[in-house]
Length: 318
Image 1 (cartoon, rainbow, N blue to C red):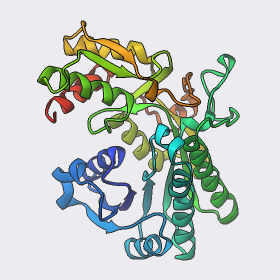
Image 2: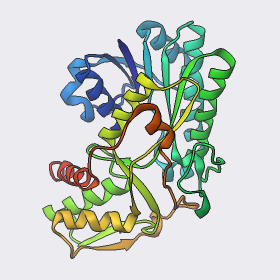
Image 3: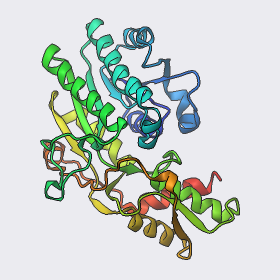
Image 4: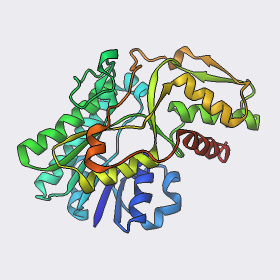
């Protein structure tokens, strides 16, 4: 089997490539000439890299024509919510137009791969307390340009299934973290700051934080990519699936767990106004029933292990 991963050099893409290689899948990965290679350095000789910029239809068309994949894991995106408030048009362009370019290239090349469209729980926006756990049927009320861009991707995947019979599968993944997560994302930011305090790089024994009262349900990225593999093995095209962990807590509780693991309970958190979003999504608890029933998937990695691995990842790098 031949798989194409868009955004293979990213956080999730690199873990997806590792899993597929272990399953003896022929892995192709899209990247840009400026893509950092750190996340795939250890497997770069096993991946067939394809130069591709999602905003440039000709490069996407060429990639699809040359690779002829059996399955596509579309993971490339502008995925940082706060940046989407500063760069709304760019976020919409990369995520919506980039996805449209990918789907059009597949259609025009008359290919028929399975296509995983990686949407996000951010499409639900700020849900009401009586709407949790969140089902796939919940109204979409995105509260950021990123959430809007992912809703656009989500709907494009459904539209190409309805209009052309293309084998799209849409996931709305809830919060996930683990080794290689970018340092602007909350758990990874905390872990990096703790490692910097330990090494003396950061002199002040405080953690910069945003809204510590937001409620999130966390999963490990390695469980997430295993879910994506099962998605393309067992699920019906044209369907939308929530995927998320089973460990729900506030951001403050997550930080407390991380500090306990690190052995630095004396480190305090300090809210930074620069990290407060213009509008925030503060209640994210998934109903995974549909995906559980379709695949039998369950998270396997305890969240404490995820945090330990994330902290050790940054201890090796700061």
